[in-house]
Image 1 (cartoon, rainbow, N blue to C red):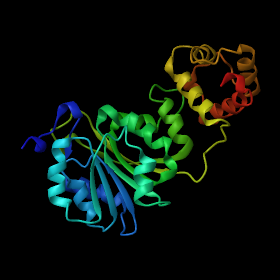
Image 2 (cartoon, rainbow, N blue to C red):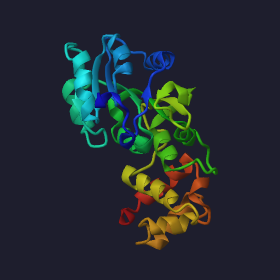
Image 3 (cartoon, rainbow, N blue to C red):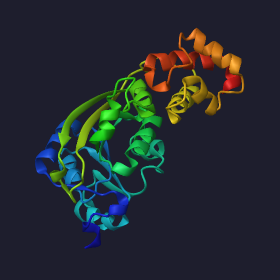
Length: 275
């Protein structure tokens, strides 16, 4: 059956190791009172274990060929909803809010390597919806999320996620646990939204522009990178914001800590002409 074969174009690698599946469920810790979003249920191996908890489960699958397979197994379970959709386009506040208004959701996902960063940005946009996310990512991506400043793995995603999440690597998953077998290790990470951002950043849109701009051209100095990112309308104001933040514009963006990005964002937010 076509739906049973992994599709390279969709970045599918089905997790088949039962012990790894059990460990992921332990990280999610589902209860009958929980609402859980599963991204990319595939052939339903993780879905099956999550459903055993009695939790309300919404599973979003992009591969249309897999939907009949999932419906055949879970269609009679009133606690499980199988939906066809692209997680990068699904309106998450509408989807989740309409199923359980005011409820915080857990997330479980084995993310395709080719879209994992994009999915993380989507979750970041509406992090207030979630209680906990347990995500399997390429180990390299997991390493970036834990990277300290002033190293090649440290980037915009590191800073932006760290502002609103506690992130913990739970365990490593070897390639042999998947079919087909990928060429790299994976990592399961948990993301717990903070009750309040780790630092005050002023205007969040400016903070996001600032962080992305600082890393878009990593070889440039911070001043030049920010000018290239659109912060050049008022160069005097930009230099003033750097000075007031105690940051040398000759540094590179990858050397700034979250707290330094936040301080600079607060100063830039005070001058809305740059927004």
